[in-house]
Length: 295
Image 1: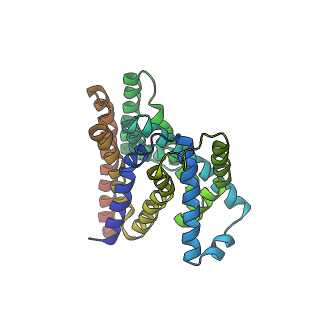
Image 2: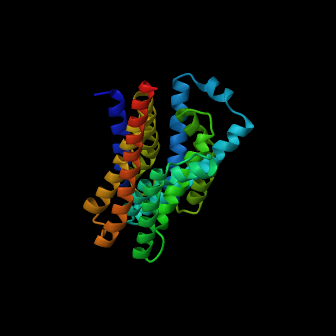
Image 3: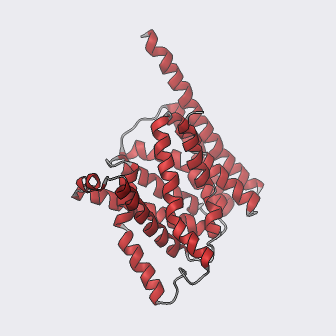
């Protein structure tokens, strides 16, 4: 099997089982967990850059515009992480998975609005079905599924910002985490001064897991970057649903979160939209591939 497929499977599998990792730290406030995730991710990425002798190249790309773009990216990513970790430990894993199922279609809409990309009529159909699914879930919940929508929005806008950015995944994530490193550090120091800090106060296992937050963040990202270079983007697009599918199954089967038949209807509409969207894309690419030789 292509190495790229293994790398992609590894990345998405790790992202998929993230809820279990954060559940082990459910006693730690979400904001502190994100502080540790930012700090240890940045330090580990910095070690990777120094170990691969790319520090000069990293410094050379820094400019005012780059810093501004990646500050926005860092704030969006941190917000996404915070919502996700809080939701997982508040027993909303199923709803977080919905957010990442919605995200690709939300990104499509952002592309239409901000990048002036055009959709075929057959592509608008799945977008409309997904929107109906979300509205149906809003009716079932009695309010909009704000966790799912917040995750889709923050990660979708993050992707849009990265679309206009110029750095690769290693330099980009290093800069993103570096620009929010100081606020994260100040907050953790403040928590410690207020005697509310969890690090070194809640047991050795918790300390190791907080330190490991950086490792579990950068490993799947580096695997994903390696996969994206080796396999077609279409395959990457299809495989991305491994992660929210695993999250959904973990929420329902492992942590026994309620999943009623009413919720199943709403989720099924979103799943149908995704199948139609990717199916339509595959059919159109094959049709275009056949038309080129004929032309």
